[in-house]
Image 1 (cartoon, rainbow, N blue to C red):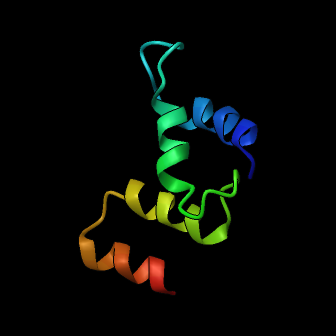
Image 2 (tube, rainbow, N blue to C red):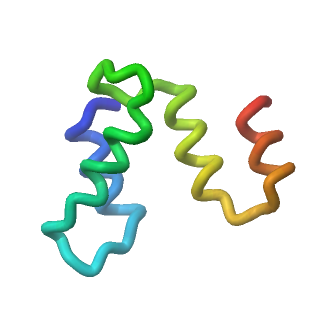
Length: 65
């Protein structure tokens, strides 16, 4: 998922009070661990796991499955 796709998706899933906020841009930078300008599958799984409200063991299990 490239940055534009990520920004579009983030608007659908993240409720932000201000549309001009830099939060989605910062999130993309944080999760694009290898700095290739895209969120790959492993980076995406981390995003999903971080947003999961379950306990730590359940989140870790999701990441390592």
